[in-house]
Amino acid sequence: MSSFKQVVAGLAGAASVLWAPVALAQVSGEDLGFSLISKVRASQGKPMLIFKPSVAVAGLQASCKRSDGQQVSIAVGSIRPGQEKRVEVPQGKGVFKYQCALAGKAGGVAFKDFLLEFEVLVGDVPKIQMGADDVDEAKRQLTLRLTEPAGKVEVDILGDDGRIIDNVSQKFAGEAPGTPLVVKWNQKDGEVMGRFALRAYDPAGYFNGLESVTFVDIPHADVVFESGKWEVLPSEEPKLEAPMGRIQEELKKVQGVLQVNLYIGGYTDTVGKEEDNDALSHKRAISIANWFSKRGIQTTILAQGFGERALKVPTPDSTDEIRNRRASYVLATQPPPASRGFPSKNWHRVK
Image 1: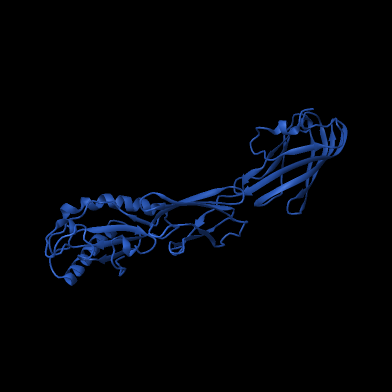
Image 2: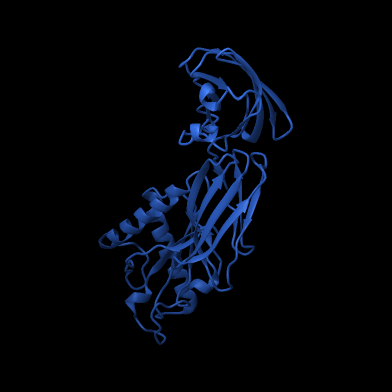
């Protein structure tokens, strides 16, 4: 007699199926033709016991004990030789193991206590919910909520230079939908988190993913401003179109899930008084912010002028240096740290 495990090998959805015919040797796994649909999305199907016997089966029923202690009875009934019959396993969302004793008649031979063991996984793809304050780099933690019970969360943390800072895999115990799930990571002092990639699983193994920037300098060609002026010249507008596409691309990834803001910093050269340059650079930052806003950037935009306090090209005082009349564009979940060329955090909301 070939083993029952050989009978179900290779069947889609069959998981951890064992058998032990302890009643009559005349009844085998081949006689019952058993297989299993063990993993299903709750929104798309039901777990099923499948029988396709080679002999006539009558009065077949299964008395099962579930891993949570619940007793489950499944009536199968009669099946003609070669007929396939599917019977739903009455289980909601969750992962449970079953120990079942089958009883009935096969080929006119009565049997009982034909033992089956299997696992059933019912779940669905979770939606990920995060708020504006759910990425906390200072505490090295992410907080998220799922629309399904929680199984596992995996997170890759990358620096602003693209290097991997940490990989985290944290198991959960089926916490109810909406429960805050906190995932912590390790990060060295001085490292800046640039983005993260997150995968959240329900207990059945269905998952969803999210990738988001948390701090990224948007590469761009510098807009050149006339000395003492802050208007964006028509000839300079093409330099804003390329970064606008990158900004929209990054924002689309987290739309409806995570709040990422656009921070625009303005800078000047060393010509003029420091306080005047602060005011001039602030106007330049606002000018660029308004340009992005009018062309459809759908997120909070904040601006700040740093004047000559963060020169791109160090120069003596009163030096007309075109490369210092520029702006920076940063997408971030939190205000950019001062150590990244932003000497203060006095951001003003433009949109």
